[in-house]
Length: 282
Image 1 (tube, rainbow, N blue to C red):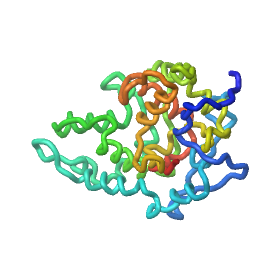
Image 2: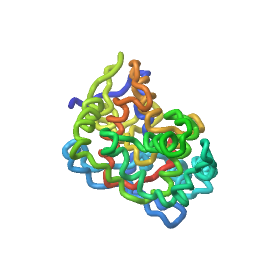
Image 3: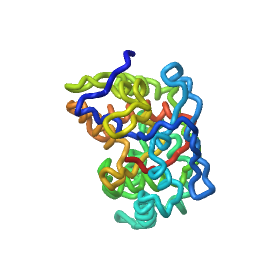
Image 4: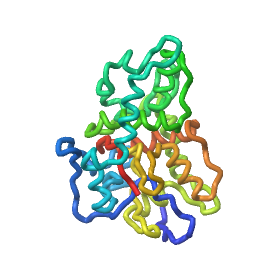
């Protein structure tokens, strides 16, 4: 694919991750005890597209990187604490809480690393948000959360936090293959008046400057991400929506089949990196 010079005023597609492209390899260890793999061999599914996969953390400034090294400094951990309280909150007519089935959030360590994944019972690829809503509606008999609501995004941060350091290992074979192919098609499709694809920024131009920012590979192993730009946690699908919107295109909606497929594809591009969320990004 032809290299691009990104000079148009509206090209803000970089915000999935991003930061100063380091020549030396920095090391991320959270709380002095959780080593995070921020570079890994490119998985076979993207061989030839990327020489290696790199977390967005490596593209951040040292000041931003340091916020992620200590939970007391990471602003995203405030929302993890909120989700811990929610985890023990009774809901529905039978006063069921998440902890009624799972004693602690730590019992769900590893879940973040393997989602999205094929759900045999429902015959579809499900995201972790879909699984949470299934628990709410089918097991707790209460209302589903909106896909990118504060409650949902906070819970995603909690589930990511208990999986930090575990390698992303999203399966793309078997019945999930067709959804993965759909996500790949979306990743390489040009959208909007600016005619940009995800790959134009995050494959062809990662490490290059886009205004005051540096383009990352758009890896999602660190999501939800606390963005300093908007001072809040941002979900994967919200970030997808923002990127497509910034190509000046009509965007898909969070939780749509298109974004589920794109999440599966993009998550698989980061296989081998560590779960890192909630991360801190610009």
